[in-house]
Image (cartoon, rainbow, N blue to C red; front, top):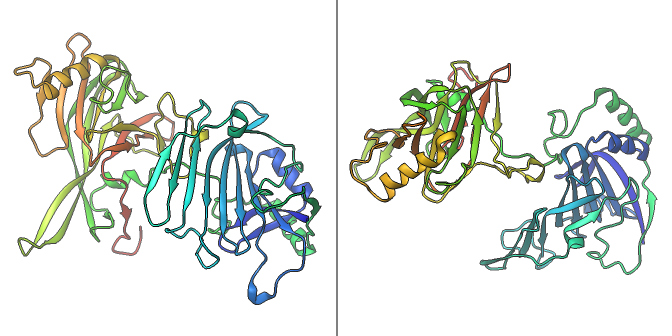
Length: 447
């Protein structure tokens, strides 16, 4: 088999076609600079009739070294993606971790791409040898196991530019290695390439089509500032319109150590906290973002107005946050994050807390004695009896550190968002307890 190898600035996932084709030399320059580009492998042969659409590629390689990422998408004759392999470049520049893979096993040519009923196998691997294999069966049901893989099955050597093999050869049933030939780049494509060199648009920068591939991104914070700005209109998907009201001040928290802990005081009790954020030693305001909405209550057969908390915040300064970043734990490596992955603290008791990390162990010990063991009249512990999400407070007399525990809306992982000023200083630390709602246009049409 003869396989054509073509290069492009991006890959249009909707059209299943390259966007801004380029020469091998331009692709080589982008590879050396770490910039994103795509490599398209097609079987050489005549194009199908126009009414049958463009011939599907054998595979598409998606490269962005600056994002530590190489992706591989394999297609079948119907133009459906059958395999998705996510590889990561970590500390060893000579090899790639097979971080994440999905295989779809379509039951027939009529089954749509990514059909929910399609059997699939997902494998996640980590550099320390851990892994998880999940098989979703046709008709429902799944099973999860730990994959037993050799080191050479977890990692692959990083080929030099232009020396990648057709990694999907086995999927396509090729008994012999294919012969590679460069795809033709038309004069129009070369002109577009020259123009693009001057403009330097990149996938995901707003100047490429929204349907083009971009490197995976971790979860994004959304417009958190808006949740603390009264009058802003939002929706959570269940209630069509909700209005942000004045934040509720709950109290203060003393952090004399200068290290703020954000974690489940029960899950992480007695151990190190999940997340720590450096802040100047001091006493800081705790408040809650709230929204108000009206809905029809069926059992009352009346319109009811309700107010709910959407986020909890430790306010370090009154300066509005100019940027937001996800706080990372000691074991979190952003180079391993898949699309929309979030780091944060884990809870299996629907509880989080802000606390002085320097007194974490005595503070969580008091939390356990007061809440879990129910010791009466315990010094250093109190229940908070109001309408706030904050439930318990503990304080450590020797250090002066405090802990304030709050309720989340369920178990799972809750990201911790650090707001920073334009100068890079921490202005606040926020946990979204309901997820980020969607902003609605203001009444004059602005957002």
